[in-house]
Image 1: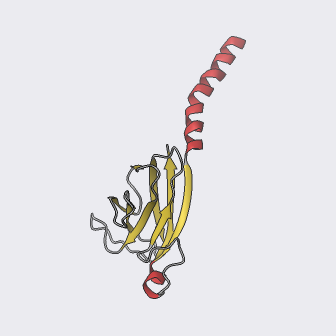
Image 2 (image 1 turned 120 degrees about the vertical axis):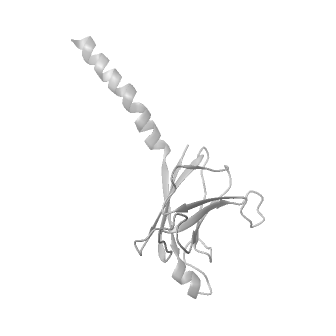
Image 3 (image 1 turned 90 degrees about the horizontal axis):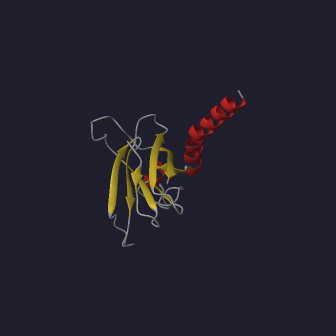
Length: 142
């Protein structure tokens, strides 16, 4: 009886540990965008600094993927692009389009900030979308 109980507890731990391990590896960070302020304020938005309504995120060591969700105060989805500038020339070297949220985690190059820029207009599938002001949530995983 004791041996069966021990085996059951051990089996439960073996199954549960990978789930707990993955949860500890995820890190979530948020930032705000304000299209209205960016369009009307000569000093730009009061977010992390893009006139085109962006939020910068700095990946940490070991993080390899990011999932992004945008929550606009209008209630509509928001078109956006996730970018990285590999060579520091101010021009994105890689871009991933999204609408409302990424479909799956996006791989990125380590050691380089990610910029999530909101965009105006409908989603690629024709879904109505807008960018007023809201929150960008980035979840980083290994």
